[in-house]
Image 1 (cartoon, helix red, strand yellow):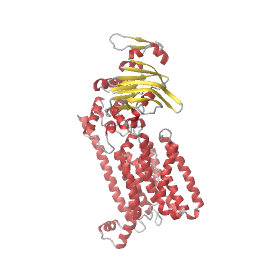
Image 2 (cartoon, helix red, strand yellow; image 1 turned 90 degrees about the vertical axis):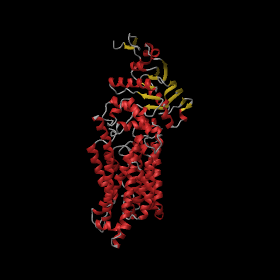
Image 3 (cartoon, rainbow over the protein chains, first blue to last red; image 1 turned 60 degrees about the vertical axis):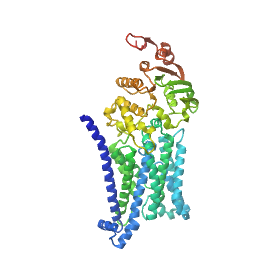
Image 4 (tube, chains in turn red, yellow; image 1 turned 120 degrees about the vertical axis):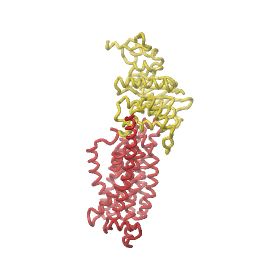
Length: 342
Length: 259
């Protein structure tokens, strides 16, 4: 009797734990949202930020907040959600916790297409998102063509991704050397920057992002089944290869949506799912929403720090994520030693 | 329910692993596939359950080619426990077993009362309900095997396929697993097809045994018909006597090498 009560409590606890984590993340998101609006080249006191929402702030402040700070914060939130969910889906596809839109070359595909347009066909910059999508999809197809042999092997996908990444990286470098007089836009793109985000950006990234995120939620059951091994998933009636392709396509779509708007931001898709997994476990029903919130908070935090840490200079969010995300990831790897399955 | 596999040829690329294999599987029985390492016995099990493709021949389930069945349809009829399976270390026992209901659920549907009832049934019949809230890495190897069997049972299949269910288990857990298989077959009427290494266990629990040698069927029949000194010599290159002992329904295998 006492034992079964204890077990009941444990199951109840895990639900409670998820609730607490979500509440905490939502609170963190709200606080970061307000802080990111307050911080910038002209600092706005938090009380005044609140006044803006109440319609009581001075006109100039209201203008700055409405037309610059809020859109930027919103773009950061959506981009963080997309990239982290893209990462967590790829991890299910590859059964590999190191998978990330950056590491399998999807972001590089989008980036390469975008850089080509920026440098060689600058008059077509308006169609940049379209070309980035094309690039990401093409990279995806290429990776699958190389990895496919009677099914998709997770190890081969990641190796193909590395190869695709290397080739595209070389091409990007060459293009930049050839066009060294026209690099500022490209550099911002390569390093992932939210600077200059306006409502138009919010609109585009939200439309594509919400389509991608909605599709991601439809992938939850298949992502879960893939965690039990291919044969077990097949036994449960899951079309394993088709699921892999569908999940990768959704992940590529999410990554491309962000790359075309703000450039390449690494490590979000790697670090956010890892922390989420430690907090709530591996069930995608709770892991996916937790990862989404975690990614939003993370990108918003990184961008806010990037804008405020060095007075007078803005450090692109992509650089912030690399500088802090990389070592943090290594630290977690050393400290925890295990993530899932072993 | 019955499965008829006819003239199967199974291989990878140019290499033929199993050739001209015909097997007839009836519900209500325990059918065991035996054979030396590399003889192709797991390959046959995987082909019959559509885990891998076969090049030639056909597998027919109640008059329908299994290739024409939808994956979910097939998984509601047969349940397969592969040799290799993994689960994230934070999964709880009950959570894992609930995955067995996937073939019965729509993409967005959650657990219905029927699902909950069947999950509980699958766990009670396998004796895993008592530790339902433990993490799957807190339980023993034998308990873990029972949990995985419960997962497949939750699919409510007519036929249960087990690929070497006792490998990696110590002898007490092996016997526990075999007892469970026998009990499931007798009490729930589920048909069982398994690949086994241990001939004594195959002899004790099976109604029907298929012997495979070098990718071809060597013989099949009741345990007493199939497990003979001649077969042991031809297939395993082992000398033995088959001994009948008073008070035991099944004979014992006495290996001469160890005498």
